[in-house]
Image 1: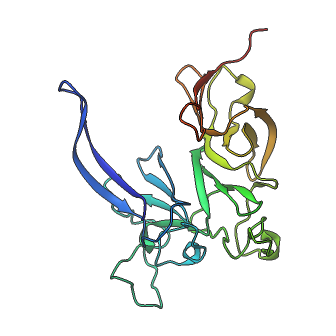
Image 2 (image 1 turned 60 degrees about the vertical axis):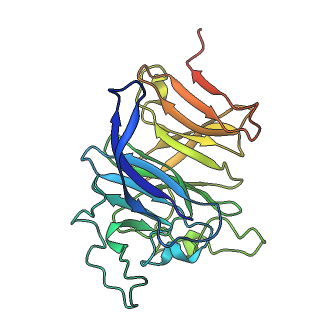
Length: 269
């Protein structure tokens, strides 16, 4: 199993909208057994580059393996080709290629676990939020060619109780700008730019699954801090901003009879 990205043309000229000319432009490599940690969030920046968050597929070591695109942030052109200025385009592996597949050119950063939200701020900087292991959910400011350390370091620990070294023990790895223990279990990330919640402008909002909340985070030049948490009484999968500045919130409930799409606006008075 592995995630994939395809592009196509949305044809709205017929009685029913349909996709045509669909082609796969990227795949997770290698494919592995299991179901979790796909990551798989997509974002286009202002220059037209496609960003893809790729989870480690619960396999740990691929996040540090330059012959795998698991546990990585990926940067591509919209046709799937690799930009010439990506940091590892000229990387030469000391090991022979597996299956004659070279993925290192598409990698922008590495050492990620399960990156489930990516968002751009007003300066064009990319922020990423990911689930840690037992503790240590992270909000990272993504830097060109940086290594965020997983599974070598984490501010959480293994699920079986074995400790993991914290980021401050290995300064060669990029540390998160903020982190959570107990976890919030992030499902998505956005940065608010609207007027309805004027005091929130420029803040990040994280959807919380196990925390059943929307978490508001104040972003600095080289820092981040949780400033508020809004209990929602349900697992929150996604939060996005509408054209009018209202928030659209998607609940993630396991029973089909539950789970709502909510529109949030400030209370009057």
